[in-house]
Image (tube, rainbow, N blue to C red; front, side):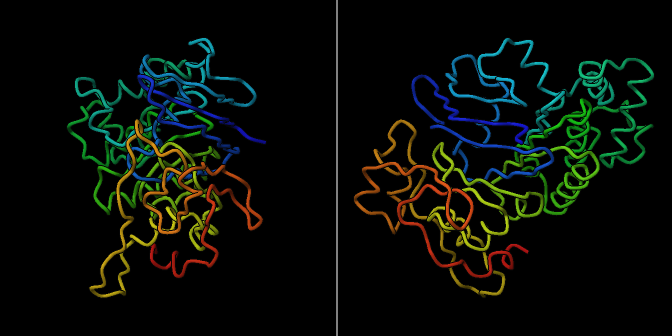
Length: 326
């Protein structure tokens, strides 16, 4: 049974379509990664699902949470889901925390909105949440301002705010991008531990394949507003079949390869206003045929497992993917 079911989700800005029919399911307790280059639609998918896009955005399709439709639902119904059932943390903690309010007040506000806690009860729970996410001396630091915390600690505070509503699903939108490598590892460990402790599901949005492999059970690869491949982490990383997915893995540096040159994906992501008639990746794909340039492949189940949208997928397994990411 799916906790969240997204079907044929489409988004357009000023008549330019940027999502072209996203289908995605999230089961209770599952961790799913969304992978792809900047601008492929990873964040827009969940901003649209939660009704967080600006008014000029045109959103169509279906987003259901336990059978209740969110697209086109009354504002009160959507707000009852945001924070309480589905929470979202963003990639830049410095712009997500209010700099003129103490962090304790901001966490207490989430507790008041989603759990009805006030006063001493809210403050006590806020301290407990700060302890849970690894903020040292939480009881003495709850009245500090965001600028008095490091970048990694600010990200932990955002996670505490997201957990205030005891959500069933946490959407983490590139939560480690603005952090150095050591702090990134700590945040990934924190998210994994919190998921085990609370049993919540998680969507992890990232362009970092290593981070996705560390925290997710399954991953979906997006390109130009579409999901082009989806599979369990083990199968996807051992044998990626879409040429774009293969290109992402081939661009990962091999620490044992000496001074060998990297193999980047050629070309650039197409302009959403000038997408090719067929496969959006055809201009960058060495395996593309004339048929690819004229026809759009559909995302279909594969005999080996997973979903794939490609007319000429790779057949042989890719070597040493997990080893390269370790």
